[in-house]
Image (tube, protein in one colour):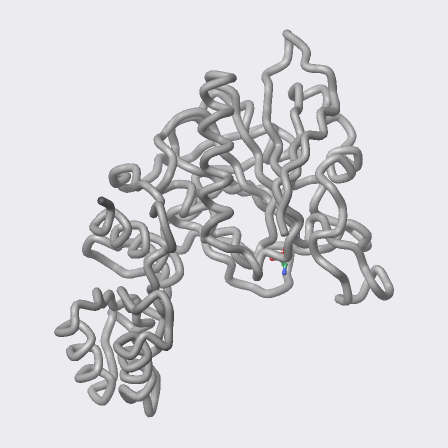
Length: 326
Ligand code: ASP
């Protein structure tokens, strides 16, 4: 399925900072299947070498080392790939202290990978994710600019120690804050009320704020299968049927691994339909961890403050894995 292939390109120069660039696919590596102004394309086609070759001037910013980790539409990402990326970055940090890393990634689940890496890696040299909203063959393509900007951030002296970062459309976002909020426009990502950490572009990198919260402990990935945490939603007419079906499948082992957690996309401040609540209480009574998030965006307070439901799911899986660790 996935393979790691070393594709060293530019000869490392002693004068330039080193940056590891890991390719994982996405629209940034996509190719149009119809007219380049239309939306038909296949994500994850071009290799990381081809993406770098399309960015004039990158070789003046850094000595790049390129590696293709996978070439996927990020809708098909798996938690095992988060672990592969984290392990690769840990090895890179050990081998090249202080040197940054850039990851090219599909935009659809970019925030999940960024946040998973934020949980799995200790603070240190910059790790910067980037992607694109238009395939590499489109008119007015955004990928090369985003990749250039991501490398600018990766070599910026102010970028280290801020947690995992995302460089997209001229903004630098913290992994904890960023969400994709539009399916197609170039300016698809934002960091909600907290806003971006800074900006990147023609004038280089400018950080305008610090990450707002103290980060939690570094979490270890599970040694076996990831604990199953499902997302369910509260909405008009919601009831407990879906949650009870999950509990039943878990009890009779027709669903493997069994249910360990539920993240509820609640309404507003994290409220739940009165017909759904009893099923959540039953789940909790059966040892399933239940966290209520908000479909209006981020949870306003508590241990998951500021996280959207998908990132809470990432964190909950990792927290459950710590509890189950031998
Ligand atoms: N489906 C694509 C992906 O996430 C979308 C993108 O990259 O913009 O891989």
